[in-house]
Image 1 (tube, one colour):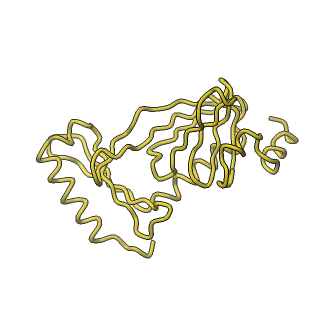
Image 2: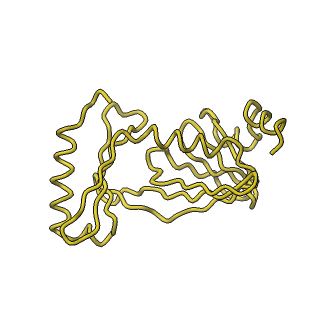
Length: 184
């Protein structure tokens, strides 16, 4: 991207469809999808904006539900592989299906997405399970909530059904919550 185009995107206004889809949310950055439409980082989350009104409603993935957002750069664009977190039961999340967004022009989007996802994570701890594999305990800031939200994500979904694995996860989660420093 030439320097003038980069300045225009960094300090300019988002495309009309992105601004309309965001509504009252602040649009922080956006990238043009190769298939049409945009991927936008807003104050509320990562928003896929269709190219036209007949292409469906814009999808929003709140920042605290972004499990992974891997960026692979290529020229001025690249590919985002976004893995959402889905609550399968209270306090237990699973990784959802990966959604790929191929961008012809990414602008500042990769850096903004990284920063916003990182800002939601307060603590992350990985622990092994008795039969192999592991569990990740994550404390996140959730907009509109004063308290952090702790969740458990098993490496393998099958471990959620293993009583020994669930017991280890419960014990580790209780210890993490008890030692949580709310000042962070």
